[in-house]
Length: 377
Image 1 (tube, rainbow, N blue to C red):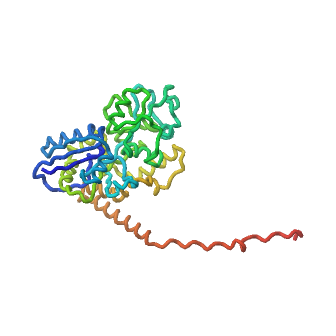
Image 2 (cartoon, rainbow, N blue to C red; image 1 turned 180 degrees about the vertical axis):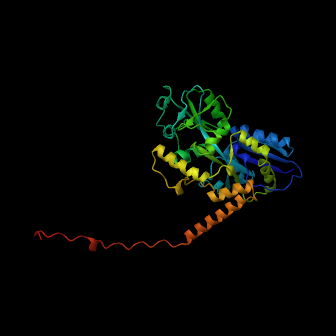
C-alpha cells in the first residue's frame, strides 16, 4: 500500500484535478488533514464511500487550512485544498500550484432567534470595520453585534470574504471573538442570539442551529452561486507541488472524485464543480462591479480585480485545467486548449511590442500668450 498525507481545507478536497487512468493494484491508505468543519461535512462521506468501494481507507486528521498548505510546501503532504488563492507574500507558498476545482458560497451566519434576515454589502463592510456595532442599525433588536472570526492567520474563507469586501484578503477587521476553527465558531453562534460569524454554504447545509443571512436580499444556494446572483460565491482550490512523488495515488483518488457516486456526495453538500460552473470569470467581474457600487467604492478595472497578494490561476488556464480533469478528450477541452494558446500568444506579443513614443513636450515659453498692450490696441 502507498501512504499519502492529504491536508487542507476539507470542502475542496472533493474535486482534485490531476486525473490518471492507472488501475489500482492494491488499496491505498490515505491520511487527510484539514479544517474541522468541512471535514465533517464532506470528507466523512467521501471516506465512507471510498472504503465501501474497497478502493482504500482515508484517515481524517482535521486541523486548519494553513497547516495543509505548509505541509505540502514541506513535502510532508501530497496536496491540500484552500478556499483562497496563493498568498504571494508567504515564501512557503511560492512553489505551490493552486488549481480552481469547485465553487461554494461564503455565508454570514447568526442565531435562528435573531430577527435579521438579510444584510447589504455595505453593512457587512461597516460591521467588519467596526462602524456598525448594534443589530438595531441593520433592522434588528437593540443589542451589540457579537462578531466572531477565525484566529488562524490567512484562513481561506475569511481571506476570500475580505478580498471581496475590501479588495484585500489580509484586511484587519474588528472581530474580538476569535476561534481556532469554523466548527468552534458555529458552536458559539448557536449559544449567542446576538452572534454573527462566517461559514460556507456547504458547511451549514442542514444545520438548523444557525441561520445563513441573505446578502442584498439573495439567499445562498447552488442556483444563486451558479448563476452569480449571490455576490459572495468563492472558489476553492486544490494545492499541489509539481515534484510530488505520489502523482499516481493522488490520481486514483482524483479519478474516484469524478465518479457519479463521488459527485453525488458533492452535490449533496451544495458544491459546484468548477468545470460545470460556466463562465465564472465573466460573473466574477460583474459581481465585483456590483460590490464596488453597493459599498460606494470607485470601480476597479477588471485587470486589477484580484488582490495584489493573491494569485489565482489565470482564467484560460483554469478553464483548461478543469476541462482536462473532467473530459480530457472532449471537443470543449481542445477548444479550451486553443483558447489558452491564443491568450498566451497575445500576451507574448503585447510584451514584445515597444512602448509607444511619448509626444515631445511643448515649449512652454513659445506657448505662453503675449501680454496685451496697455495702450488699448
